[in-house]
Length: 153
Image 1 (cartoon, helix red, strand yellow):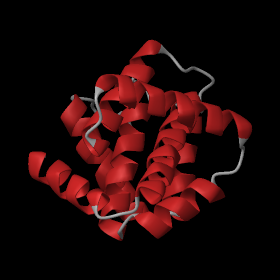
Image 2 (cartoon, rainbow, N blue to C red):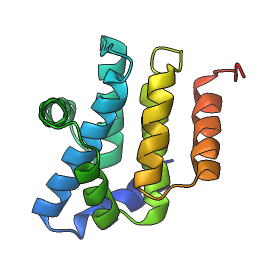
Image 3 (cartoon, rainbow, N blue to C red):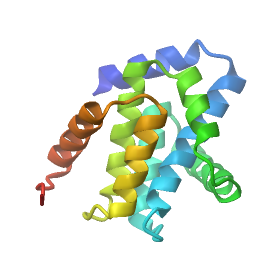
Image 4 (spheres, rainbow, N blue to C red):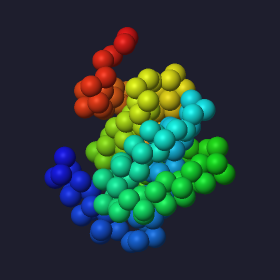
């Protein structure tokens, strides 16, 4: 995991800061959208989002929290996922997009239960960022295994 994080940060460091900020904001907004999909946005989900942003972008806790707040504001002002998806598609290589789907699954499972609206949102985002159903399902299984959640299907 550390190697993946290091590689992510090295790639991000090569981008212009404006691009990196747009990418970070898009990722934060999608994480918040996932948390809000079931009309609940609780402390557990906020904590998971902060942790994921810290890990993914190498941020200090305060910076991650600020980024989450910015993402929440952006998500509140926009109902379209296309803008975020366009930024993700322009800035992230395909294999990193699967990592983003894992992040979304981790937020969706933050409360231990997958709501159908959360599932639908992750499916929709996966389609927009060109992550196949098979890859999305594999990402879900990895997250469930990591979190110790049994598949209830």
